Length: 462
Image (cartoon, rainbow, N blue to C red; front, side, top):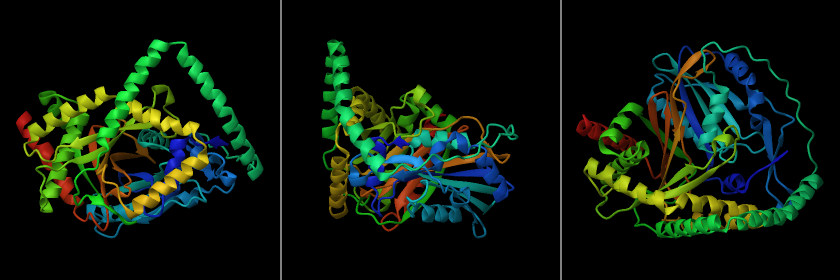
């Protein structure tokens, strides 16, 4: 039995039938497609390496504590691994439509919170594996790690010995409540010990407090409401999805010629994409601010292999008002340098850690109240989300077939009608774009704008 952290649990309680909080990917493989049994055998051989795949969520009675993960005594891979095919011709349009439909459905909390779909019928003799997992299980980095565990690094992997699953006994409601109360009683003692450790090094503590204060102040300035635009407002339960690809070497060429980081280049071309989207809708962009939440991993290297959420965030303004690509990139570089100096990441991590000190019932009531308000009055401080997760830079395989593309999906929430997820894999970069079905029918314009922005920067760089 494992207890969730407060950030993990918040993703459960923020889900409300409209905001679906699963992360996902569409992995495209070289064909021919393997049989269902081949994929099932390949996954069965690896399941013991990811215990969370065979665990379900149990809620503590009276919400006295954080939910816990327990072994599912009725686990069946056949429920989670599913098999379907695209209608002919099986091109990008059909794949986008299927992905959007699957992402519009919430995961069933009576089962382990993940699903995978073997998709046959792609053109050019290809097939796909669509996977989705609840955000309470993993963040983007650990989600990519999960996929890397399931896949192989060689076309013909060594035969793995299948470890029989022996689920642990189910805890009673009384035990769950008792353990939660013990954990709550122990928490003040742990906090006191942390204070004592801090007081042993007062100089470091003062520096950290100064940086934290600066980060909180930067957060406050960035959360001022932005001007209204069509990408901000209420959403429905259904999703659209598309993607656009790029070469990692091209982005590095741009960075090498004009400075900044690859992530700065990515944010600048996304800004170019949003500019084209808004102009295409006939909106004025000269004074417009498009603020994006940028999740930042705070996972230490020794925490790789742990499947939970270890993220903070910064808030960046995408310069959609700048039409010239180089000026737009320079503006992003200046802003990101300033954000790094503002200690927003430290502030976000510290604010998230406050959940450890708060009785869980208070967290639940606060989040439910916030979602009730957002359903009626969507927020205007965050306009979009942009998450960038580096993946492995070597080929991966499933059932002997090479993965060619790894295409990400990011969830959206009340007030945010469009989000962009970026993932790199084996020299390729994919921009996965999620849109609300009713209010963002033209996300393909954003995709083309991103592609055009990369092309424009490359022309200047060469």
